[in-house]
Amino acid sequence: MYSLGLTKTLLIVGLGNVGKQYDGTRHNIGFATVDELAARQDFGQWIEKKDLKCQFTTGTIGESRVILIKPTTFMNLSGEAVQAVAHFYKIPVQYILAVHDELDIPFGQIRTRIGGSAAGHNGIKSLIQHLGEDFGRVRIGIDQENRDKRIETSDFVLTKFNSAEQAELPALLKESTAILTEYIHAGSLLQETRSFII
Image (tube, rainbow, N blue to C red; front, side, top):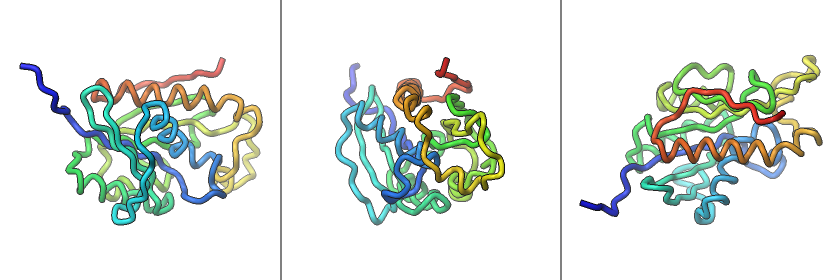
């Protein structure tokens, strides 16, 4: 018997910091990715949900309802927003996916995994505190091959992409959203590494 009902609700959280001064920075690649997915899939406008501590939009892809959020708590408290949305919509942790920057991965690589440690990422650390470790991650590399290692990590992640990287960003965002779309249709995350820059 054919059913029009949606089979599941998925929560995808892009990590970043709110505020114009953070737009286009490495640490905000998670925000940029969910913005791109929302635009490509014709989701509704982003809505400020103060009670859930996030910007929020939702849409349907395949047989899934997909909720996209951008926490408004700043990076190190992101777990508060994710926990609030997951609780309100009764979304189990296996249907939660975080998209975030990863300093230990070169720019031009995207890696996916389920579970694991925070690896020094304060946003992921907050999610683990509120959800446990068993959510999915799409980890987008932001490290420059020739980065000056004397620059503090906390300063580097708040810098904007250089001109060469900015030229590659559309391809990076396209590949990242393709991974998210595959995840939504499959309902599971493939453990893999993708490099798109030739």
